[in-house]
Length: 498
Image (tube, rainbow, N blue to C red; front, side):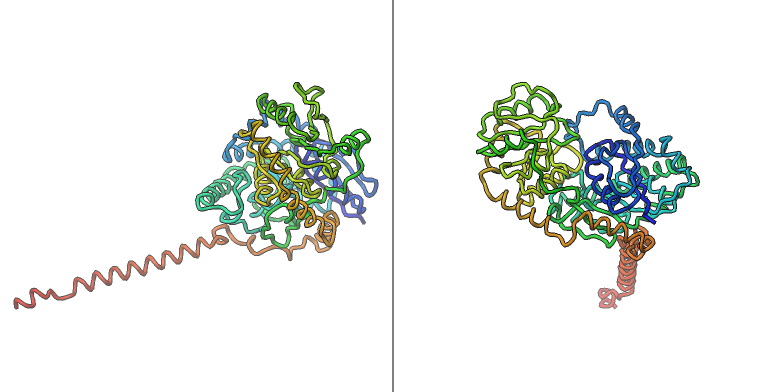
């Protein structure tokens, strides 16, 4: 009998869906039965296996109404603390929007059986209780690499000495003050989880899941974690046995472009600069001064410019700029005439540009974009241009450097070879490990001992406290002995007089 999966990806961003659909289509194509819960319907369901969409489109409206005035280009000024607090609100709204949805409530009380519940891990921990409810194995899917939000759930090492926090945008080799900042923020995040966020998620479990397990009993029960990461993109990190990297699984070899776009790129004798801020950021919302800086810098160049622009008209559009409301990014990046990719630094875009061997100029705005952008710069295949420093002169200088200096393309093409050099394709790796969990009834043998320790035991705080107490006791005892000896010592002056 085919394995039966219940999958949750409650993100309002279509980019997240673009990433996840190939994996779950891969499961269905392998003959599995997949039920996917998300705000978006899969427009191209798999031809094999069984696929069912449960579309909770109300979730998108809930989040839009909750954050109606968000200007994403202003969010680049938000501090790490503000981002953390925003995630608290978004996580609770998203989770309640899913659990309280009538469609999901009908599923919860339907008596259906599932072998595996797969949850997209992102501030939605109450959803993990559904694995317990359906008596299924729990698998987590991370849109990125190992991180603080995830590591403690499976006991993966993530000491602040070498593991930068996502929102801080710190380099891999941190100096003392950066490690101090990283340590303090990690401590604040940990306190936030345990004293605020997890209790709120626990309230949602009790409210929406009949006889729902306590969150402390379900948080650490994941059988497997699939990571959208790979050493060609991220710095190597320690991973416990249940964490499997499948980064690049959504990327496909480039196909022939639509005829007019193919001709446009083929005829670009001086090359093409491709510019896209992804699907969550709209170039048409750029502040006027930033848009003008881009137009002036682009208008002076000999290369053609291909710009993902969401409106019909771009005021002041230079003759060498071509617009597209939607562009087949993977296929464009695979064209040999593309010289550089100007990007927001999203992980999907970063993965696709590394796969195709195209260097980047990154203008990060929010989320993990700074981390990805500075990672590319540290690796040597990109240059970061902070949004607040974006001017005509600065953009011109950066483009001249990355196009004329061959080291950037050489490094990214080497990274491309590393990404493609795999014994097994990432999608086949993912399917294998999901089936492995089922074959071995949850694969408890992959569970590390850390999960059976309290946090203070893992960090040896009880051991250090004992050592300090013993040392303090010894010092105190020696001090008392010394004082006692001094009091008993004869006074030499008195002895002379006598």
